[in-house]
Length: 126
Image 1 (cartoon, rainbow, N blue to C red):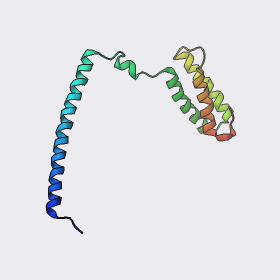
Image 2 (image 1 turned 45 degrees about the horizontal axis):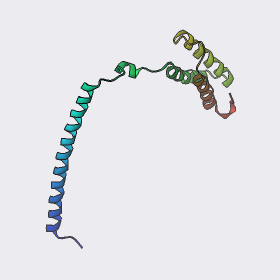
Image 3 (image 1 turned 135 degrees about the vertical axis):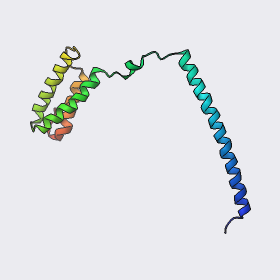
Image 4 (image 1 turned 180 degrees about the horizontal axis):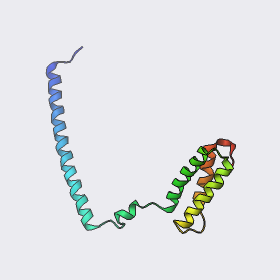
């Protein structure tokens, strides 16, 4: 049973009015938000410079390198034990030369073992 066209037309008109009202409210709130954001930026500049916020830690960079080194070892078709040794040596060298670290952070050493285990499967038990 179809509804009367007059009722549907009236509901559609009310819906258009509501959409228009909500759109105006949204626009007003968006302007208010932008004004508050601008006021906040003027009142309190960021405590950390933008370039410092984008910097990555040495640990993060070394963890990314671990993945690349392990995959190169896999492509060279060496064993998991050899791959772990090669990766540890290369990452240790990077830590000393590039980041002046005396020893590898624990999280990086753990990542080497987990990455080798993941790539070589359960046959390796670091």
